[in-house]
Length: 88
Image 1 (cartoon, rainbow, N blue to C red):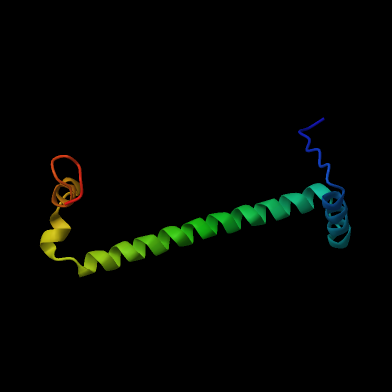
Image 2 (spheres, one colour):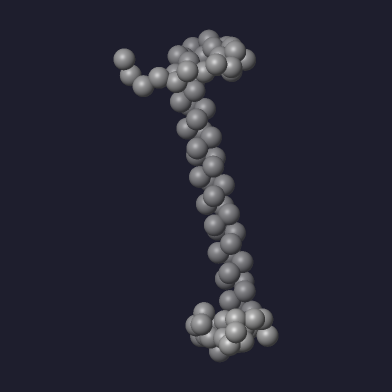
């Protein structure tokens, strides 16, 4: 026998069977479809967040002077923290 999943929630089982019957699919196929759709939605949401962050970064870079854009992260840190690591 293959891998199994034991669902103990009667309502979940009832809903899965109802949807499977309505779509003329097995419960396994209905659950697979739903889980794959959810996974795609999560991946798309993560990609959208990444894209939004990258757009913000690009807008920030466009506002910076060429000198500031050329600075390393160490140079930025050196400008905002003192030798004891405290904010200036």
